[in-house]
Image (cartoon, rainbow, N blue to C red):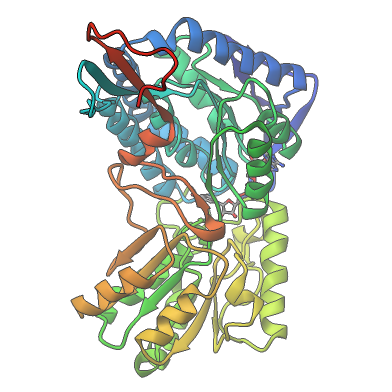
Length: 489
Ligand code: NAD
């Protein structure tokens, strides 16, 4: 049996206690994962601290960049194997996990490029003989906590910026998706990262809670559910350390009458059925203007029915299984609520079965029509292949409905009217707005949410700011003798 060992300093660490890694396509336990004790977490934090103080913060940016580029090379070389592992572990289709591995390498390279360009400023003062400048300093040891839906891709949104800025890290992957993260950290040791820069401890929320309360942690970056995010933010507040939160969403994907439907309808499919809807950016609320509502509803019902559901390792498969049993149960329960509250099932509506599907956690691509704003399926994150379609009358109505949830991660706008697009961009509560596209990402483009979708930004140069603080330096080069009893302003 494969064992996912933790990475603590230079050591691959096993444990007396293990939990199972279950393949959601076959239902089989394919690996076991070494579960961290509190002593393991202490050791990982200590290793990260020691390395930060003795080595990493003193390592020049060009050298950090060299190592990050070497890791990018290794990930690219190993992309097929890593993607296969990720798909085995969480059921995400192989073409998606393969793309994620290459995007991980891309992010590493982007931030490698930043590592020797983290500049401060020189600041002219209104005082003779004083020189003022700023430098950006790493915080120290960062706790990076990731969810199960995309363990490596989520890590790749955090780790490169943290390392480029000069922090060392302790990663805590999800108990439902730990294997690839352990493998990835081992790869980093293999390419020559100093032991202690990247440490991994495995376990559930209790391990995450212990880590985020640990006195050796200087900054937290979390991706996961909004409720967990609030608890982690509370832990960070008690210790007065910074935290960034990438949380859930109920993102509106808005189709206007004037949209190019040949693009917008596939965009709606990408928004909800890619990754079987298990993505924070899922466009799970499709807002459609009345003039094209029936046409869009019918088209999506047909397209949902044609999606190839099956073996996630088959390159032809378009939708794999749900990643784990608790999530599978939750999706089915919310679908039931949708029915009870009066939404119309246009496609799907239950577990997908037959042939190879019978072994795994499959759910039919589901479309609910005539959803009203007050329904739970219009308000709560389902995190599965379930689309709620809501009609709207005009621009003001679209904006009102789009903003009427507690979330604010991303939004999609489909229109050929450039002025309307800009008015929507100005009015939507979202950290990312996609116009005539959906689920588009780039290493250079910052990502993150507002409201209960969190705060802080990942990717792009903005991410460097999250992992550094500003140190101001004042230097007196005058010969002036200043009054010691008077503040120098
Ligand atoms: P989750 O919040 O249950 O768990 C996320 C991580 O937090 C796991 O590693 C878990 O072990 C850990 N954790 C749980 N309780 C903790 C605690 N009290 N203290 C510290 N750590 C704790 O989320 P999940 O079910 O793994 O992932 C799904 C959620 O993640 C969805 O809400 C989804 O929208 C969100 N997500 C957000 C993004 C984004 O970038 N915004 C990306 C992917 C997923």
